[in-house]
Amino acid sequence: MGKEEILQEIESMSVKDLADLVEMIEERFNVSAAVAAPVAVAAAPAAGGDEGGGGGGADTVTVVMTNVGQKKIQVIKEIKEITGKGLKECKELVDSLPATIKEGITVDEANSLKETLEGAGAEVEFKT
Image (cartoon, rainbow, N blue to C red; front, side):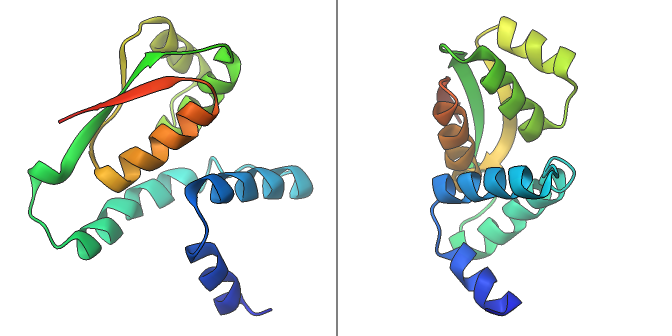
């Protein structure tokens, strides 16, 4: 299977499957996607804007975590990966709910973050 075929397969995957794939790659090759994550997140709004065809700020939302759930450590790890902040800042964020996780992002990116955080046990809502 060539690189282009792999990319086509990845494009067809759900966000949950992609998150599982990243986790499997990290475990198998003993690497972390945290270094690449800020680049991928920065590129996502540009790609989403091309598909949406809509205009400006009306298409952006803020992701707010309202409840950490039972798996606090896992949620902190996910927030660290999402925001690029240190563990101490992420723990403080989790301890001061409701907390804004990310502002001014596309609805698609917000849904992806929501799925990731809910998968870790947190409760999340969007604000426009």
